[in-house]
Image (cartoon, one colour):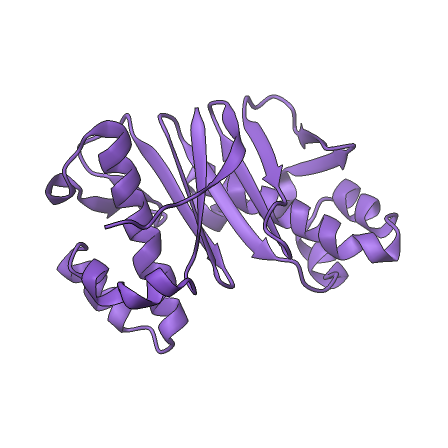
Length: 219
């Protein structure tokens, strides 16, 4: 079962222990982190990887020194040498989300912003766009964010990036029930809205835990 964890990069511990946790990632990752201009971007990048490393260690008993990440041809990261372990990371604003399981999965978090009908018209299916435009105006931004995170989570689960057009598949959300079309794919989907001002979506080939758990950054 996929488990999902959240971590706030602006917590006091995240700021205080930043230099300590830099020691636990690879030299290549550290170089990538230091290229970011803004400190918040560096924290997002660092703590996303730290979350995954800690979860792999705790749930599968693999020492941090044996954890080596690689990426497929579309840029999706995977754990080298352990094909039975799957993970995915997403971040937005002050939050980092990490999902971990035993089958392919994708997670996405987005901060609820404006109702981007122009983007929806370009990238959503006709049915999705129609459903969005028929929402009450006050509900459209939130519904747009739900659809967008679901699409991103599916794309990330498949692991083929934007080689899959966003309007080649779609979702319908009615009374918290998520319908995916075309329907000949066996995926599980879930939306979390427990983080105020954000939407989190998960897609996986296995069942998804109902909880969005707090990640404990203990030493």
